[in-house]
Length: 183
Image 1 (cartoon, one colour):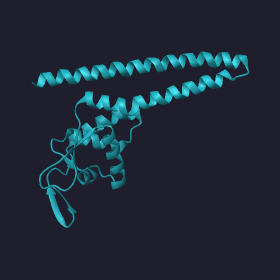
Image 2 (spheres, helix red, strand yellow):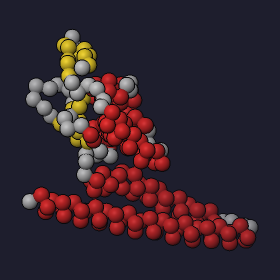
Image 3 (tube, helix red, strand yellow):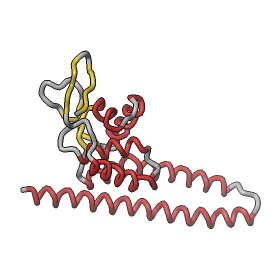
Image 4 (cartoon, helix red, strand yellow):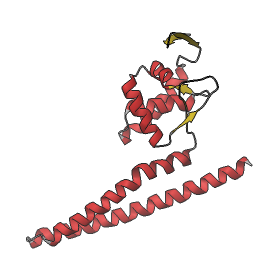
């Protein structure tokens, strides 16, 4: 059992330790997210919340994962932006408490909206800039090579746009199917 102080009140809880299997779940998320370059503490927070049945406060998570308040605050902000955590209101509780969003379709949809679509918009702007630069290229060999590269990149952009659209459609259908199965 772990004990910590909060506003001169002593809080005792048996939920303030990590079981070995919980560490394995968190490591599973860490391994999956390493290729995406996500901060380690962000993935640890999500992994911890994902495996817990009860909601946890930021203070509890800081203790369990041994992370500082600044890091925890930044990561919670990012998780809220991705809609990967849900705020939970519990009776007689002053602290915000959180649970992980565990519906994959909602996580994917949110990730696409927050990460994928903005990159596509920026990419289109950069491709237009590339086209403008190439129209002023005086070296014909360089201009020809640049137009070839531009054509490839425009194709990639178009394909990524289609792929994101298909994924969003699949995720949307998945949400509707799971809602029907609950009824």
